[in-house]
Length: 381
Ligand SMILES: Cc1cc2nc3c(=O)[nH]c(=O)nc-3n(C[C@H](O)[C@H](O)[C@H](O)COP(=O)(O)OP(=O)(O)OC[C@H]3O[C@@H](n4cnc5c(N)ncnc54)[C@H](O)[C@@H]3O)c2cc1C
Ligand code: HEM
Image (cartoon, rainbow, N blue to C red; front, side, top):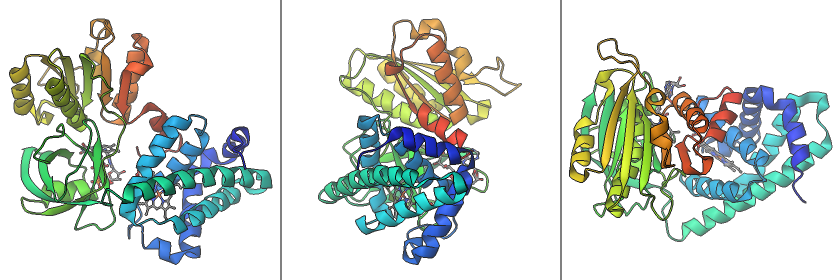
């Protein structure tokens, strides 16, 4: 069966405004028809659970871009090993997704839509099952890691360093998912704030989200000696090869973490590197890594740091990262990395495009396509 993209898009149009309903219907069907599958999911299902449906629909609707879809699915499949997902679970998920869309669309749904989604889903499932099987031979489904340093750097931000029990291979700019012992089966993503190093240590910058399950536990109830679980490294915001010599890094809040890793890696590998890193926060007190960043800049002399404070009357001028970026920053077309809250990333990408920076020279986390897909679904990024 081939994949019929126009038919997929036409049918998606019937439910795209009701994605929350599709997700609720999907999980209702999945858990009632397959109670054993329920055990793979967290006890309390929160807003982030919609990500499975978001991702599935995003992938299906972007199947034409086969190289990036295959890379994304491979990464997702390796990551799904930590959930204990097995090949026999895939058909259940596909059947329930299609049944959920059919239920939400009502009479407008046609059998040919179901056939088109089944063909697309089978393609995706095959890629994921194969990628997970290949990974089994040489990588664990998750890593146990011991906390070896925990520093409260500001009222809301802690810098936490862990030592995994086995080598943890990753690329500068990637993130890991973390599970704390207190909340089984709840995983959250945190960017790795250092470049890979022989000591196999990973550092994370964690910002407190009030009432947030994992960030609160990491900041308030975690100390040296505690064990965490890490999912495999993920994320495409990595350095191209060869490493470019001019970098522009634009960070919002803890979006500094992966950009610090990228700066460190670039300074380590290229003696001609020339990096400008602009870090934006709301209040002056939110800067949590000034000492370390200054040390890095002083050691290399090829890293320029610029601070932007957007919302602190005691520390004028009030400016965002986008306010600081000017034509002179992008004139020689540096490779540009953007990371931060979704709204900051979107506005910065918009500015870069208006300043004429070509898209192929920009990498961001989150990626613009994913932000738009989630915004349309009214889902958290
Ligand atoms: C690729 C990626 C990389 C990330 N890197 C980092 C990082 O380096 N450092 C870091 O601190 N976080 C990072 N995050 C965010 C992190 O994964 C968690 O979402 C965050 O810590 C909240 O998790 P929680 O369990 O504490 O809160 P939850 O229990 O998930 O949320 C509690 C409540 O807060 C809301 N909420 C969740 N996140 C936010 C937010 N950012 N702002 C406002 N309200 C929110 C939720 O909607 C919910 O109502 C990253 C996220 C992604 C996707
Ligand atoms: C076939 C395509 C599938 C896609 C595209 C997909 C995608 C996703 C995504 C994006 C997430 C959120 C975590 C993340 O962002 O990495 C997720 C979580 C999860 N998926 Fe999948 N998935 C698929 C199949 C399956 C199957 C077959 C199972 C097995 C039942 C499964 C079980 C889970 C579980 C248990 C979670 C964690 C949910 C949570 O934390 O709330 N997935 N999936």
